[in-house]
Length: 338
Image: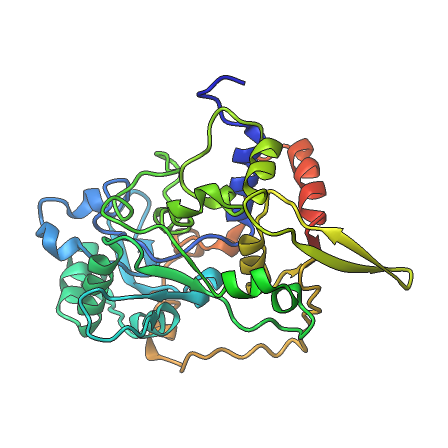
């Protein structure tokens, strides 16, 4: 491997983790030059009024190749439930929950001619929510302002509770923010616009830790297993217990999926070897969001189903090779419990 090469397994695991839920719906949908919305309003609306960070818009096309209409904002992703923002210009040090901000954003909606994308942005800039969206832009333009907050471990004997290093280290994790984060073309292509992907990475300070796999900059010139050995050599050994056929065995945790990333997965509902959480539900999952009139308006614009806003549930890409899936199924099964 040359000094400029990146281990393909490193890249694959990084992208698979995004697919497992490390993706935010918060982004600069109207300012990012890679966004399809930007070209429709560029030169018509002042750029200062496009500096807004919002959840994914609800949008539709009136007819094939017709104008784009935006009615409001979609519910945010599970990843976003745990995100908190610090305002460097505020006198208080208490971080603000993006989950709560997202609920408020979803209370803004328009219909009919007001939903034409130019009119929508102008209407939104007259709303109270736009001030919040602009404040988020300002905050996320500075480094170290966004973090993932871990909820308490679901079980008392979780390794995150019993291991002193894990318990003191993993209370929050900083995400990627800064001057370039909101306008970055990171992991984007002409046919694949995922603006929230930029902040869906760990801060660059994690690049020398076991959680390196989800930083934005790939480590070059080293095999994945060598990077793992180097980064885990900087921390105390992590051990966990497994019960097999009634026998308790102890194992050392040393995976390319770092313990912080694994705890993020656990927070989002995965059972992992460091927590072994048994997540169950009766099927009656309650939302913390108060019903809004916008819930009906965003889903009842009268357009054909083929022209509605695409969502994550509309289908998964079939571009992955089955062999690759099988390979990383083995890696993931070593740290996730299914």
